[in-house]
Length: 320
Image (cartoon, one colour):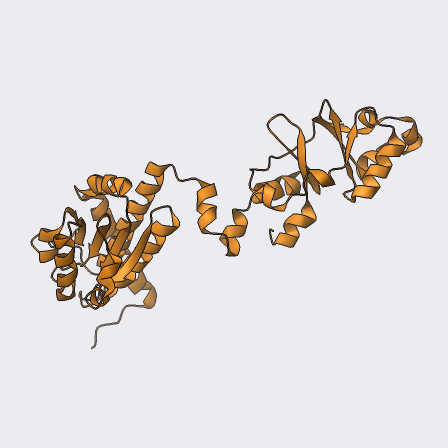
């Protein structure tokens, strides 16, 4: 009787268990040169060049993309193409991170020789400490010799997962060392959903020229004219240039009986919720949804109104 084949779910769980074990080993056996390598990249005046062939090349491209998007100038050079002219992309002042699980990949020879000739530091990512790559490495980022997750133990699975995770660890360590901010991250991600989530209030608000401003002692007939002419259904009430109140259509309805006999401060909601121009637009939308309001004043550090943000502006931009 033939052995029963494992179900897809059983295979998936086994693969994930093997790869998790490999990642745990990497965490427990973090390369001794990890911190010196990160420090060298922080001091580097050039770029961090990633290279490899085969599956290592695919992993290298992703690592380079992650580094570039998180504040470390980086790009990928395929080791084979390097031997046919792309070595010119690498110059003194750069650092090369070269990936090969075996460390014996022959296509790396020209790249390694070039780096040695021009005194370009090499970070060697390999599981073989006796390999050509490891011996050439200025920084030896040795990864554990973990069991591959495939049934024949040969297809790069666990080893590529470990390498990818090591690249992420390098990128995040560099981010934190540089104090990389969400604002800088947004500079590299202006498009798509991620860029939209990182938009700030200043990108979407109406500026000072559009503000429906009234003073605390403005008579209500004039307040109504300001609210109507500006089109926000709102008036921002100020005293000594500071925002002290907000008048909405709801406030008007609550005082309909003798509305025109009052001044702005009598009708306004005191100490209204506001945001700054530097706050994320997504956070402003969350405030609006929580408070069930459609408009938020935008103020500066001295609580002076500098803009106004309407729910329609956020929805029109695509925020939900």
